[in-house]
Image 1 (cartoon, rainbow, N blue to C red):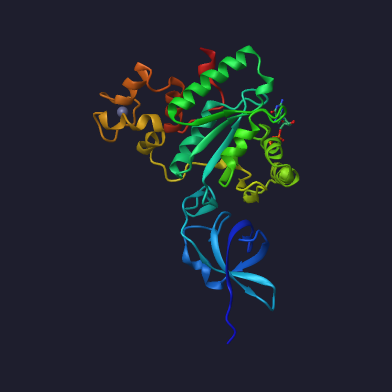
Image 2 (image 1 turned 45 degrees about the horizontal axis):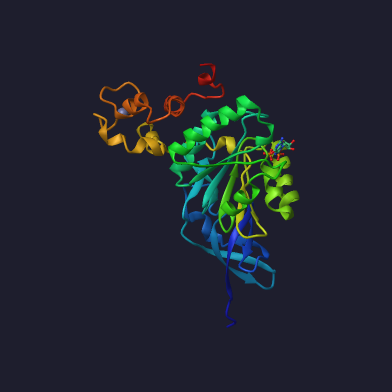
Length: 318
Ligand code: GDP
Ligand code: ZN
């Protein structure tokens, strides 16, 4: 009997029952999954997602691949498939880092949004780098706000960089951070994700732009992630619908564990299940009072704890 050759690759795109897999040479191969694969994981609506490392065979008579094995995942981003469902949808897997693009003007990204994102990313074990884009638009007051926020997020343990896709500022640093890594590209629409990508890698310009435009228009609840290879090494995962990067499986008492700067105080609270809201003997509240934890971060923590949406920056009025 003829021996089947097996290949390895990474899932770059999924479209329902088809998977586009990039093999080790960089070629894209259309694959299906072996019939009995679907039943293996009943908790998810999709058995394989973008970023998965898979093994496949080529069916020469059809010239397509058949995925028969998926390697263990380093991490994955999931969300509930529908509001009431117990099933989850896997958005992407094997992510080295999230690049959260934020802007202080046109549009203004709220710290509430940033903190909610960071909590989610921490819960998925994905380190996040904050990219403050459009710094060419700063006046004195935005410059001041920028400095304040960078200090807060650096103190919390996050790498922050300041870029201008327009002026090409610090694009080399961004490139360095992205090289040979799988990066999830996130941030509100209009913050300059496409512009930054074309600044780091001209070859990608059109592709990423296409996806973003398409995703803005698409009214479907299903979102498909897509992975793009960078010409200098590394990959970007673009996930439309990042706003729905919702809390899955995070208990109230757990939220503070996803605030890196709170972690070291948690064990000094009087109660082990302290939510750091109203309990006496709370070491986190003490740390906020002493200035060891940012008031803004704590304010957003309380909003996340109580499931409040935060689009208005209350603290700005102070
Ligand atoms: P996306 O929705 O996050 O992909 O954002 P785009 O890349 O489409 O950019 C949204 C708008 O912001 C466009 O009009 C860009 O030209 C503009 N933009 C992007 N980066 C910068 C920047 O660094 N400075 C300025 N002034 N505008 C930018
Ligand atoms: Zn506490």
